[in-house]
Image (cartoon, rainbow, N blue to C red):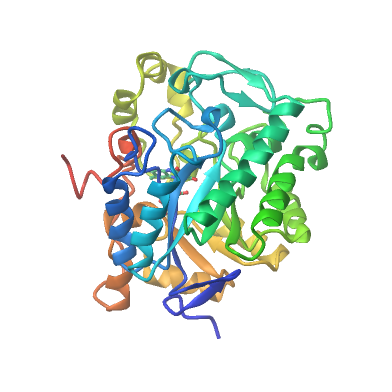
Length: 390
Ligand SMILES: Cc1cc2nc3c(=O)[nH]c(=O)nc-3n(C[C@H](O)[C@H](O)[C@H](O)COP(=O)(O)O)c2cc1C
């Protein structure tokens, strides 16, 4: 029989009160790069609303790894606030994950005051600067920074570390042949392009052992020519599974750099997005190239399911289904299909207490309309604009 999505479950060494996960949605509540009461309240809402695990979005391992300067860099200067956040969440009975990452080419070097870096040199549409190719020394430093970040988050009381390996962030930029044109051991065939992902997963696991769970957010397809295809991602995740350093994979897709709407589906809020962007990007988005960047994809419930099922077939490690989950029957079907967890972003922005509502039997469906107008609010305090138009 399929497990009950609302009953307790283990994620590696961690016991969760149920199998629902709040996926990382950048909160926009850290204007000085520090945990704020507003950030804690944001996570308290979903934790009090019943999720098993809430994920703090984008915790950067290094200053140049922030997407922009308002993000938290994990370290001595931010540890106290992170502990306060973890403690508040634990009081609700939920567990807390930190999404650990380096934004690579998705970083805005101008905002950060330090150049972005990627697998290969490329122009940045975000900063209008060149993104430089990471050197051997950068990669050694960044791997060590993942380890230091992992240690700090464990000390701060986090239960789960989610390594960001999707969306064209640094590790994902190495995986994508179109973004990684390197001729050295970090490029070429999948073995080279996956080296950074594997090295980081191994180093983090060796540091934390079974003190916390370690997961990764991976792509079922990057959704652009030159990105990682489903076939290649199947091979990549099989290697991650064989390495044995991860407790679960969260199955995402798309690219924040090349094709963001592949991640979300549904309406494309071009006007709202353009208004939230710095001036050069705003102008660029009104051009045909800019419009091509924000493609339209029809929304349907659990839109990554077809691809995710191929991963379920190939892998035996625990998987989290993500992407357009709003309904109780979808969650139950995910269990029937053999996924161990369901992760949700927008449905929980719309209704932080959705899980408790479903448990109480008051609702069967979430009410998110996938208008995606929450996306541009990441620059001003992430929220559902239907729920909170202010
Ligand atoms: C406002 C917003 C911010 C997001 N920020 C992040 C992020 O910081 N890191 C990440 O990996 N994904 C981020 N995502 C993507 C979500 O984690 C998730 O992959 C996507 O929304 C699809 O899931 P859903 O259909 O349940 O919303 C964000 C999504 C939204 C709507």
